[in-house]
Length: 435
Length: 153
Image 1 (cartoon, one colour):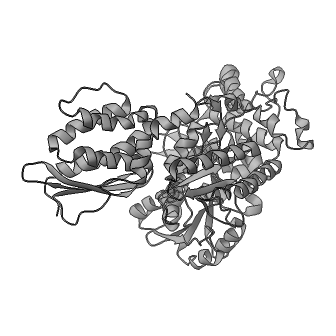
Image 2 (cartoon, each protein chain N blue to C red):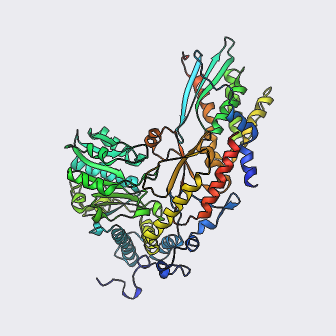
Image 3 (cartoon, rainbow over the protein chains, first blue to last red):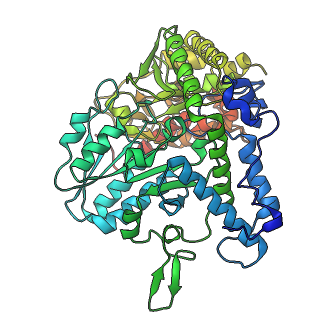
């Protein structure tokens, strides 16, 4: 289609040039973590007088200049509300927003751009499915199957459905390695099971679930599947056609993109059959006080002015990751995970929680006689940021008999030197607390 | 301030000592007041038990539970400071402790200089607002116990 902007060229968000120090030829060279780090301004910021060692990417990833610049440039050059004005900027903003949707479509290999619904985050995407798919397809006594590794975002929405509609929530058991055995999951799939909703990667333990097998098993039982891709999408990506999942949810901020933007992918025929999640502007085709006809997908699910600039930023994050190469990033992170797992064995009082054969690049651990909060606190004094607590996954903590764990997670900018700094600091924690 | 100094400022020897060897960490089979609290942010939980004597003074005080070094040390210090105090004195000491922990204005408390000095060991918390909730958890728990309308058996 001929762009309406002619001589102005495509909107900035469609072609986001990378800064000079990181050219497109990078994919042909070995992974250069120092060059990658140079793209993240916050990594230059000292913390408590020390260089920042950011090991909490699983909670939220830091942002590369490309993402920061995409939002800045959108506000500076292209901003207006979308889907409304007949004027230049509104059309340009609409084109930027639609381009971001097509980038997500490409990233997930979805059949259609309108199968991509923008939400605030993964939590809202899951709530959307619980409310709207629940309304369309579930009644009292129907069952939803989750796993014992879920974080609260994939537990509480189903508990709310249980209260509202009387659905039954079943939980697939977790073994001592922190894995979900396939047979335990399959046993729960019954004639009244309408949906299986589970993480691809556990945020608390790093376990990679066998989602392809789980999806096949669910489909054989006539059960639809929602994948919580919050932790996985940044490491493993997702090909929704190859996986054949019915829904997938993820947050932009864990993908090196902005906060306030998330994605729900759903198969067209399922989204079409679902009622709107919220009412308001943009999601309607026509309104009288007697009746409203709803807009087609995806705007049926995007009531009100959405997070436009954040969607543009998410598009830039996807460009960034795609150019870097998700498989190269994953190889880098896996090498760090293996190195960290091996070096942490030097800390005698430390035990790693979760020994799955296939793990994403995060390590949950406890130290005998030292509370995780105290570990995180002492590390903070060294400029090292790790997570401590229940990771919004209290049932996982209960399964392993701990109130909380400390968690170090690795992203595409972390280095072996940072793993060394972590290990040194943990040895000092040991010396400080253990008599 | 370098790292060792930052960490030492909060994890002073006296704090580490109280967290490694907490005073009055036990349950009480019979007591006049008790309460249990949880810190939803971290899952820590603490129970406090106290026996008020007939003069309205805390005769015996103890705590139990699972918590971080800061909460444990704070609970341990609290039991030492509150033994022999009335409910009103406990509330006044908590107000002063809150000021110490958050870097707020510290009003004097006549006759309690020694107690305030003890609580000042936790003044390093003022740089860590998130950890203030750890240190105040035992205090909130004991105030809840004191304010519970009916006596606990």
